[in-house]
Length: 78
Image (tube, rainbow, N blue to C red):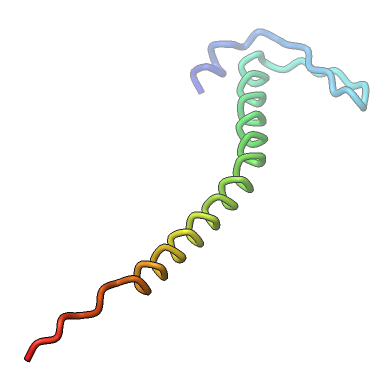
């Protein structure tokens, strides 16, 4: 918020396909660009992360199955 209030110089922003131009505070332009970049990066990153999490869970499940199958038999006591 302080960044936005400190950078109040006007910056012309053009909305390309519509041909409109608006004067926004420079701080708002920078913050909006950062938020949009973060959200775009998150949108590209999350599907890959979810796929890797599914793969890791399958691998852990498979490893547990193999360990259970190869476990030594319990000791027999008389």
